[in-house]
Figure 1 (spheres, rainbow, N blue to C red):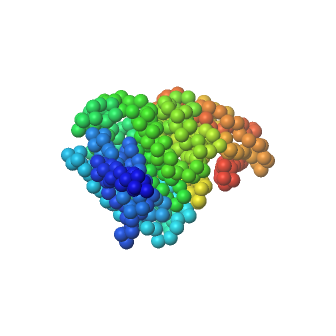
Figure 2 (cartoon, one colour):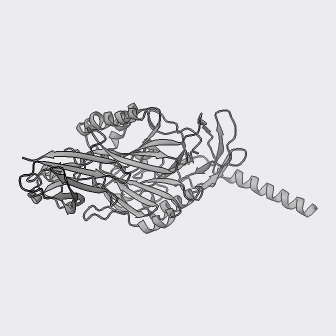
Figure 3 (spheres, helix red, strand yellow):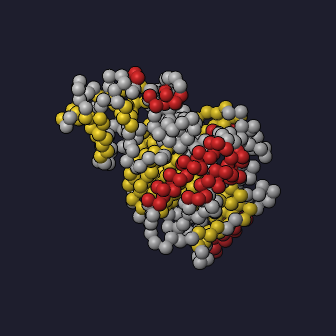
Length: 472
């Protein structure tokens, strides 16, 4: 008995010493002061959970870890300051041996069964003129969509390249999205790095200046997660930045280890959103930009019901990678860098609207300045120059579950023929062909003398979109 008592005393002393030795520690409680147990806490490298007293401790390397932050549980509010969620993290002070940081979470008044998620790729403004377009075109459209979902919780996620190497435009961007009245999260893109410096992982950890620093000052950590209802939402950096606009699309071991640790606290089968900048599983020729370590990611996320949201390519492509893994490489909000109103694949400037209920997600692409039922573009014969004899349809949110059919003069003609080519709208905007072919093009050959053609598109959710076309 005495031996057991001594062992217990030593164990208690050891645990107390470990807590005292931790470089980062604190508590998590609710607004009533109740300690919260089981909340996941990370410093960007190490993970822990709060104990029954709401306490946490981390032995952090303060040369590498700049923040301590929570994965906010689904039963608590995501709080924001003027649209930017900035209360789930706190900055660490490397001049202190011990950092103490307490967090307070606000319980939801009632459980949440569903929400709306706005995935916005590449605002990518380079000057005030482009920021004006974002502010006067994209933001009002987003606001209109948010108002459509009045009574539902709405969350936004900017998928990187918030600006085009212009760190000074982060503040105008934040001012622009502050009017939306929703939490607007963000991903770090290649153009969100300070081009004067390498990433922190590519230089001595004691350096005070590194490529992600200004982004962090405005938006906090770049690898983080949070929960809304039953959904687990992750943002992950997949840009390995060297300096002077040189980078590789890569997660790297540290990012993938962080992801693996984060998901270790998540029940298999959970709906998981992973937000990245560069896509992971693109197949389109010259779409480009895939993260190099895709197979490692696929292995880690295998037990979950996963949707990946990506930008970077200014190109729309969907890929059902496995039955439980779907990637959305979304057309950019800026299209082809604010040169006009379309992306390189012909998809209009816009963003993805995702409706979540329980463990299920449905979605549609919302073209800026158009109604939500604008889901394809029709070219009459002679309008698509490389396909002059054909009527051509561009269905930007297409995947293999879609049906694209046509009829002429009321007679059903069956499925349209899918083909690869460069979109005509993009060629016209760009001024010449560039070789960026897309596979979400379809064509049919109307009979001579036919005046009336109807195009019907049925998406993966059984929703039908039609357009009647009058030929000359």
